[in-house]
Image (cartoon, rainbow, N blue to C red; front, side, top):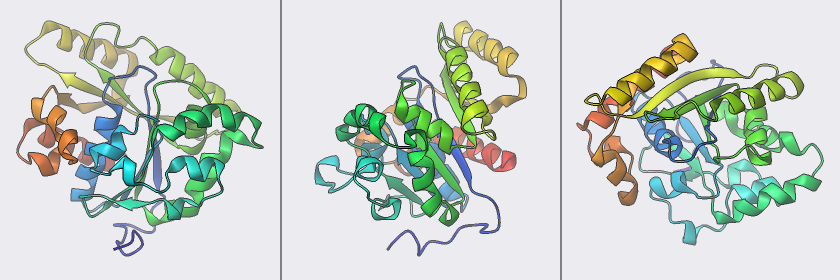
Length: 266
């Protein structure tokens, strides 16, 4: 079944394109891309997740075998493929993925010589975005040309922040980059929401970090926090989002809450 067969929940509403981004690695970007899209799928929202990280964790986390892929997002960026040729199905019927492999690592250098290199992803998304309620871009943990492409293509940033020391380290730099892109390439770009991940309510540290981030971002911070959970960590190795791997797990419940918040925000 192709992605065009599945209908959007609200075709008249503008598609929300969100870059899931934090230049720190290991904060839960791919985990959020997988589990938020799956939870939105449960809410009858049709989602496209673009894996834009050469590690390809979102691709494998949705059970897509990277070794068997003929093409991935690299081919759209640099080889002239259209986005529609790259979209693959996932175990969640309303979620589709544009996969990434390690091949994408070379794109950072190869894009340098391209004309309008900062807007290539934006133009690719424009071909297909009207088919979806939400488009998520799972960004690499760096601020190179791939990330600039994501910032140019998105209308909002979703920033996962791990509940740990130095949680806000790097976020200031990211916001500076956002302002730069906003002023030169994408005037509509803004922070859509900030998500606290790997939260452990038993620790003073987790609660202190949440309070600090809340002070910094105010109501941009989602009320939902994602708990630390063994099941969330296990799910990708089974190629499933937490909602399908362990539907009653506290992590699955949290991502459903987050999905409802995202829908309320637009």
